[in-house]
Image (cartoon, rainbow, N blue to C red):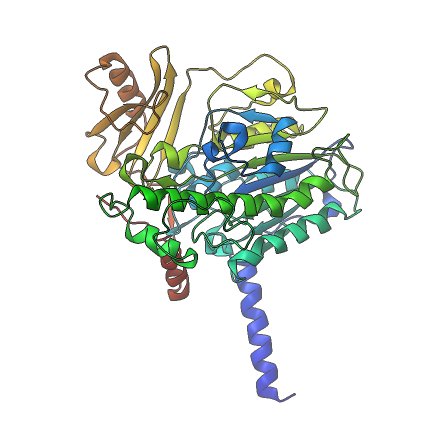
Length: 470
C-alpha cells in the first residue's frame, strides 16, 4: 500500500471517529455500574410521522397495523396524547429529556441538544443499563446531540429508505439475543411512514384509492410544494395520499413484527431476552401527518390536531396492566413514566409519571391538566374541561398577542374561533399561555454552526427545512 493511500485511509477513519464522538459525553465503563437484579430491559420505539387515528386500536377502519394491534391488546394504550412538536427534533429531545422545547432548547435541526441536558439514556446508563440506539434520518446525526448517553449509536440514514428498517430490526434482534447479563435500554427510530410514500409491494397497493397526484417516489416533493394549496389538492388526491400513507404504516408494522414476536407479543406468555430479563416496550411517535385538515398537507410548523395527536403504548405483561388511559398525556411524560416503572431514581422533569396508574393504582394525573405544544413559530396550550377539549394557539414572535381558541373534541379539525362562545375558557387558557416566555422562546438554544451543505440538501429533499409559512 502506498504511503499516500495509507494516509488517506487513516484520515477517513479519524474523521469518522470525530463524527461519531463529537459532542458526546464520555460514559463510565460498565464495570463501574451495576443495575438492580430485577431491572428490565427497555425498548423505546419511535415511529416517525404516525398519527394515532390511522391505527385500528384508535378507531381506524383499516387494518393498517396487525402487529401493533396485537401489542395494544396486551398493553396500556393512552387515548389522548399530544406530541411536543410537529417536527422530529423537538419531539425526540423532549422524549429523551422530559423537558419542554423552551427548556431544553432544541426546536429544529438548527440547534443541538445542550450537553448539560440529562437524557433518559444517560440516566439509565448511570444506573447500570447498557444503552444502544438506532436512527434513520439526518435529524439524528451525532452533531444533533440526540445520541447523548448511548454506548453505541447507529444511524442508517444513508441507506435506501425501504431498507433502513430491516437493518434496525436486525440490530434489535441481535441485542435481544445477546446473553450479556446487564439490562439494556434501546432506542429505535423507524422512518417508513414519513413521505415519500413509496413502500414496496404488497404494501404500496394495499389501500389504493382515489387519484394519485404524484408517483410514489415523488410524493414528498408533492407534499412540500402543496402544503397550503387547498385549491390544487382535490379530494381524490387526498384519498390516494391517505391510501399510500396507510400502506407505509402496514409496511413498518411488518418490519416491527419480528421484534414483537421475539418478545412474545400475542403469544401465550412474554419471552425474556437472552439475558434472562423481561422487556418493557414503549411505542410512540414524534408527530403525525395532515391531509388537508385545517387546510394543510404534511407536517412542518403548525400545531393542527392531525399533526400533533400521536399514539403511546406501554407493554410489560405482569407489571403494566392492559388498560386504556383516558387522562391526557404529552411527550414530556415519557421519561418520568419509564424511570419510575423500571425503579430508577427520579430525575427533574416537566412531565408527569403515569407509572402508578399503569401498575394498577388510582390515576394520579389530573384529567384537566394543561398541555403544552411548541414549534419555533407557534405555541399552544390545551385542556380538557367540562365544556370540552380546547386548544389555544399563539405566535411567540408576536409576543403572544394574537390567539386562536378552538374546540377539538367534537371535530378535532374544526378551525372555527371559539373565543366569543367560551370567554371564560379563553381567559383561563390565556393565563396559562402567559406563564411561558414568549419574548425569547429559543433563549436556551445552542445554535449549530456546523451544518454542512450535504445536510441541508438532504433535509430540503425530505421537506425538513422548516420555514415560517405565514
